[in-house]
Amino acid sequence: MAIKKQIKSEDTKRVPTGITGFDELCGGGLLRNRTYLVSGAAGAGKTIFGLQYIYNGITKYGENGIYIATEERPEQIRENAKEFGWDFEALEEEGKLAIVDACSTKIGIPSHEKYVDVRPFDMRSMMDQIIAIQDDIDAKRSVVDGTTSIGFYLQDPAKIRVELLKLSTTLEILGLTSLMTCEIIDEDNPSRFGVEMFVTEGTILMYYKRTDSVRVRGIEIFKMRGSDHSKNIHPFEITQNGIVVHPHEEVYTA
Ligand SMILES: Nc1ncnc2c1ncn2[C@@H]1O[C@H](COP(=O)(O)OP(=O)(O)O)[C@@H](O)[C@H]1O
Ligand SMILES: [Mg+2]
Image (cartoon, rainbow, N blue to C red; front, side):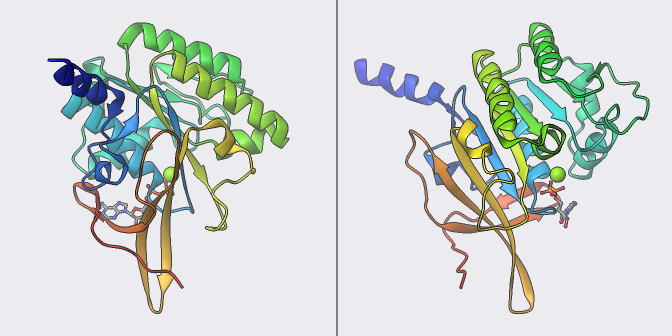
């Protein structure tokens, strides 16, 4: 009886991404109420990873989601998702998903979205908006895609660190298990501004490395506090159903 209870509480501690092959790399999933960084170069697959995490959360695990789009307009997000057969619009209509447009106002174009971030960028108002959404849809997962444009806006690394820490702490207090994406240039350095990994509980690195004449996609759990995890780089594919990780294979890098 006691053992059964313990297993159950262990289960609820983990938030499976539902991404084929990934959860096996980290003991069944992410730790609940924590924030993780997903780093990679442009085109590495960060956005797809985030979309799939949110979509699986709602459709496989009954966990509502908030998607904060700072680098693409919600329209583009919906289109990207649709390519994989994930109908975000339907989930929004059902009140299970909220997409925050934190992109349009930044580039000075009008937005007709339900949730629009103000201009100029202000972390406080973004957090207030997330709090209001949380009242509406009681989400369990969120994705901030991404931190890099926020960083460019704030510029000063010390400020970026404080503001991102406020954001990740707020998400955790709201009971959200979250991913924040980070666009990097150098795959040996998992953060763009040198501070992003200090405000998150773990870092997932996505590679799109060239070996000889082919490019190979790989994923690595670079760091995950409080969790045992694979230390290897595992190959993954982007299929018509989304990301598929091969947990029993490794990518060898020179
Ligand atoms: N339907 C698809 N099938 C296979 N690969 C795709 C598909 N759609 C996009 N991709 C690949 O996904 C990559 C973009 O992924 P994305 O998550 O947007 O990258 P990031 O957010 O890291 O810049 C592109 O390199 C493209 O090759
Ligand atoms: Mg992206």
